Length: 149
Image 1 (cartoon, rainbow, N blue to C red):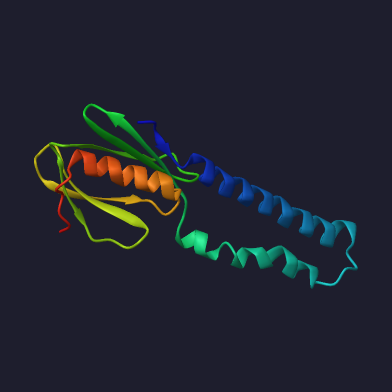
Image 2 (cartoon, rainbow, N blue to C red; image 1 turned 135 degrees about the vertical axis):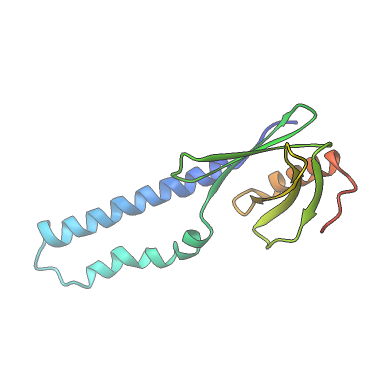
């Protein structure tokens, strides 16, 4: 199995944010330095795209990397512009079941090193559909009879 990653989709969003930031800086420089007699209505053009990003602020992008490792699956996640990484090793010995979540996540009940059941949410909203299906198929291979609790 090749690694499952959503790096391209998240990076597109990151560069779109960079481009939007440059656009806002350009509008402010143009309005206040180059052409100060311009009406303030031009500033609305700088902030109008912000309303398009509102849903992305709630559903913030997360890098997901799923790779095969030691008879199981290693799932790493990292939020955009964050250094903190979380990783889960899902094997046939520690993957117990799924749990109900919203449509943006996959909920996994995984046993930790002390044999206590821990709930992990894997954010899949920024994954392509074929990568999401591949991840679900790999989880089904690990434990085909995992119930939903």
